[in-house]
Image 1: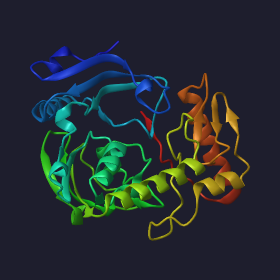
Image 2 (image 1 turned 180 degrees about the vertical axis):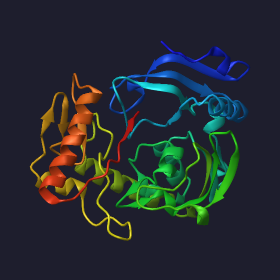
Image 3 (image 1 turned 90 degrees about the horizontal axis):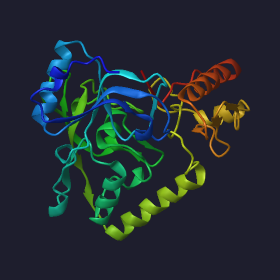
Length: 307
């Protein structure tokens, strides 16, 4: 049962669900509930809710697409935000063919990849098959061997935990491998600087990238994508493959309860029938221990675990 006072949400244009299961909203489809799952219907209501939570010291988390998230079985206290209302999923400029477009933080990245390539705007086709909301993609600088979203970010509009907003120019964002340095709680909108190109060529490139990922990765399995970041050098650039290290330690196919290291790609940890979040967390921890013991490399989780 939620211990949150209903007055927290009074007068706000929000939709609230108490003791809301979060597992079905993640790609793992396991895990506990949110004390309160909240869908704001306006930027103003979002800001006021954040101010109230800050004043009352109530924890706030933001749920994106749930692709790289694992929710503990005991669930999470406080407020979990979803930016699912159309006000947070607007796309501006694409219908006019503008190369500089603005997209809401709740917009789906894979949908945007499809739409921009069809419109003859290049820059995102290398992110084909990357599941994320735009806000989550920017916060973690989503990408891979074919590019990362920071390659096309022009600016980001953010809101902090006191409900204050500011726009951050690209040059002021500390993008790096799987990080952005953005500390504000919510990504409201992202401006992307794309490049006009032949739509047919972009679509073909997108298909090639997706086909390669489908060949290498366990599509169809319940995973969060890559469980670990690749090791980096002193300049913060990837210098080895987490999947290669896990494979070299003989961990492909290793199981704990309903969790298993993928036989297709060792950096993918899958939830099979009957799996719990605890199974997955224990397996992730086991893989980390084995890799550091056998190779001396401390793998860093890419999957986010709540709480």
